Length: 72
Image 1 (tube, helix red, strand yellow):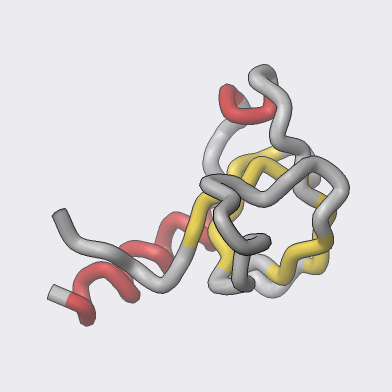
Image 2 (spheres, rainbow, N blue to C red):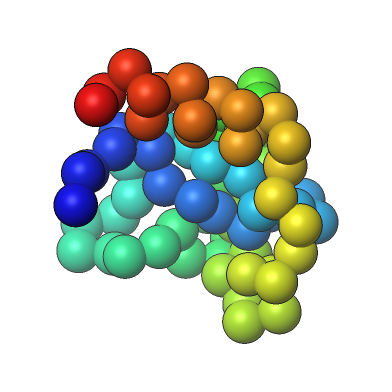
C-alpha cells in the first residue's frame, strides 16, 4: 500500500486533504487543529464521527489524485 504525503481531514463541512504534519503519533488531526488544505483553505479540523461522513471536497479530491498519480 502506497504512502502519500497528504492526509484526509474533516473541516469546514467537508472532507478535505492536507499535507500539514499531524501531531506526533496521531492518526488524524485532532479536533480544533488548524490545517491548510489542498484546495487552499485554512480550516479547523473536526475529528468527530459525523464529520467523517461529510462529502469530499472536489478540489481536494482532484489535487490528491494528482499527487497519488505522480507518486506511483
